[in-house]
Amino acid sequence: MSDAAREDASGPAMTAALRVARFRLIWTASVLSNLGLIIQGVGAAWAMTEETGDATLVAMVQSATMLPMLLFTLPAGAMADMYPRRIVALFALTVSLAGVSTLFGLSLAQATTPPALLALSFVAGCGMAFFWPAWQSSASDDVPAELLPAAVGLNSLSYNAARVVGPAVGGLIVAMGGTVIAFGISVLLYLPMVGAQLRPAPRQEIPRLPPERIGRALISGIRYVLHSPAILSIVIRAFILGALGGSAHTLMPLISRDLLASGANVFGILLGTFGAGAVLGVFMAPTLRNRYGADGSASRCIVALGISLAVVGTSRSVPLTAVALLVAGSVWMCVTQACNVSLQMLVPRWVAGRAVACFQASLSGGIALAGVGWGMVAGHFGVGHAFLASGILVALSIVVGRVWPLPEIESTYVVPGESLPNPQVLLPISGRSGPILVEIEYRVPPAEARAFYRMIQDVQLCRKRNGAYGTSIARDLGDPEVWMERYHFPTWHDYLRQRDRMTAAERMLQDALLAFHAGDRPVRARRFLERPFGSVRWDEDSADHRTPETLPIG
Image (cartoon, rainbow, N blue to C red; front, side, top):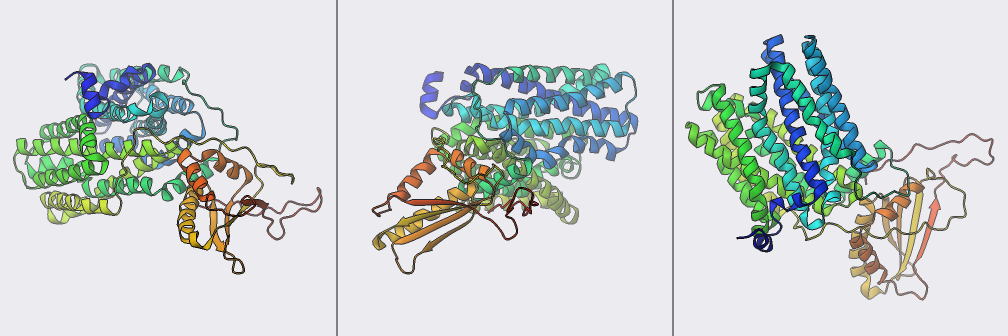
């Protein structure tokens, strides 16, 4: 079948996104930078081995590299939305490059020490922690909507391919040239991505409002996820998958030692097999998603993952365990990619980085919890029983899909609505003035009251995820046709941002709500600047008794 015929039958082929020149350039550079990060980790681990030989310190090298992903993912997502993603990516790459370059310089001078190895590995990890949300969420800026699933899949392939071949390549480089050469090559592999990010992005929108501060940006991202049922379902499903199925990540060394009575060579084979399965899953995911839908394909893969983990727990054969881990790696990637694609197709651009960061933090948090939980189970009942219990719970977790199903994506991602003009204001205020109270009065015939009430709840959910808090709906006791909607914003700028953030679908929902209004006059909207007791300055020389700034989530 030709590529064109294949695309007609099951959507764009995986390689279709590579036809876009900018995405092709950035993706190729990402493969090299991810490979550089893996090689740097291998070199640092071997340098620590030569310095101390302490197993705990050697293991801490990997922890130091990956710890920033848990600590800084959400702030990194906020920065990716607050500022141009290309600038954030360049800053992050500069941080990683500084850490690896310093390692290279110290190794040249033969001045590496265990604290320096851990600290500089942490610095390199910090850079990549801030780079990944900006890189992942910028896919929709580089490719058209119909190619976004393929682009997300290729981004997953970029990292997993590096994870499969990186340890072997890094080990070969260390064996042939030592840690100095490994760190030097790692530095060189970062440079193509720096060059790719220096190219200006084709789409540059200049916001009319200043960016949010980091604290408020974090709250805005969390609030959007909490008040978006579809996005919340994805985040919850990712956490459950990580917590129940993370045994494959956290107990992998014990499979070789306790279940197969083998050594490090078998552990390396099993680790590579799981990574190879993840690469295979990248190519399987589009076919499964097109055939069964996002939730249907995820459910089938979750059952397959549960069976694979159970086989790992009961097998004492290296080939059988390797096949089970190959399947586990492929279906794990299929599920996580289904979640990632659905999320990026559903969120508007203003919050894409924070939504991706919430997804990554949820999945990583689940895996971290699995490390503690399944480690305790393995310690008390044995590694085999831990994998068997993990497999059973993973397979049974498909019932969670009835409560939190994965949303089915459409052919295009969310369309932003037109920005509304600023309302006329006669009271002198600044962007930081607040809180702002909004009141909207509707007149609805009693026969349509129930339908109006159901729809206004959906409208208020939109308002909440776009920044509103303190929402309420009231009905006039003396005139049952009169309904009053009230909601607040922390500041005037927050209110104006809400008018910019609404999507086309949310605008249509509000228009449908306004259609219920049956009065002779238009719907009446009023905006107030709340003045708590003691906050008013009666002349310019009076002290400004500011009330604490409100940062509500809901």
